[in-house]
Length: 477
Ligand code: NAD
Image 1 (cartoon, rainbow, N blue to C red):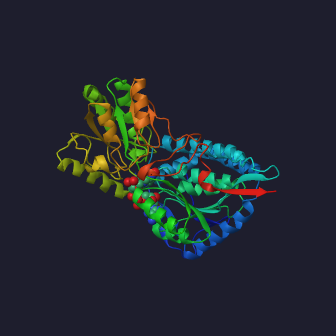
Image 2: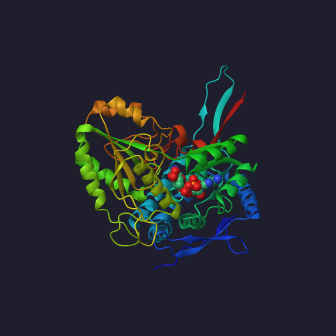
Image 3: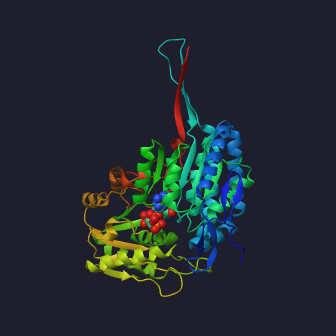
């Protein structure tokens, strides 16, 4: 097998490691093999990254959109060229099947291209004046140095979305990637380095997440904070950013409801939902999570859904035929077991799975739980794994009330053949995204983001630069 990615910090255009810095092991979750040592940034490293990002911003903010666009396009091409090699390393340190890893990188090339196109269209406007000789102009300017924090579930995707938006807007960025699964972010640093991005515009650091984020967010150099991760951490970072009056984009957890109506194509719904549920072993913020199935369709749905999940091949993501890999790290196994235990104690039925697999690696099988009450842990907290609770509902108003009852509002899924039902639920669901009869979110050209506790702001779509720009009004006579 090819060599694992060389791990380092990337500061002011240089890949730096060693020098007595603290390191941590990076582990393959399927084999528990140690893949490499990841260096942590010292305070001096963070200070260097901050001043490099500030210096770089002072000139990058004047770069032409054409120059920024060309670099993003080059990064897209390099992502496609290197997808196999980057994907293999991502599977080794994150666990997902190789086909999913490579697919993530290819789709991220499209994200780079989208930002390359959109950054040429960051327009201002002219406002008609009250007196004829006055000119009133609105311009949008890059906000400044950004600090970004990205998680381990889609290591390439989460990082490239923030980096492309910052670079395309004319900002510089310091990104702390996921220490558990760092190879994808290292590969992104190499890609932008090779694409000719001026030094200091992108800086990559690693460390104790809370220490690094605290240090960077407090720095007066940082003007914007972007985070993808859990709701509790997002709230902490948003509070700190608020105390220092910094712009935020928060892409946080969800608990996506799935509404399957009697009139839907039940077989298609059950089979496609089973496949979608085990994507990335369920470690997806928009994973379908609470399955509400209308009474008449319930038995048929459960039968097909359980049947499809029973046949999923779980194993090392590099092995031929693997459909679901391990969970990304050991703490996810403990978390899955706690969800199942809580359900068992409340009298729920475990229809499938329920216990970690007894083999090397962090493997937890697809699990289906029924007869579970709406106040169980599984129905109210984000499981972030391959567990699906399936419950019955009788009418539309009742299921909408249950679907909207949690503080989350990220994604939602509906299966129905009634236009009337589709219209009513899409108008009523409290969610940033509503998918009806298919799974269509997270494309570069569509906005991705949540409402309520699931976050603030959108990534992708024509909204993608909103969090990275400030508005300036200029008037003259
Ligand atoms: P966690 O909350 O400790 O960490 C989640 C992510 O946030 C990790 O990448 C971590 O490095 C980072 N993080 C944690 N504390 C931080 C801080 N103070 N400053 C900056 N970054 C910080 O939990 P975990 O065990 O790694 O993951 C489990 C939970 O995280 C899941 O249940 C899920 O809710 C959430 N999560 C969400 C997403 C998402 O896409 N929204 C992605 C990964 C994890």
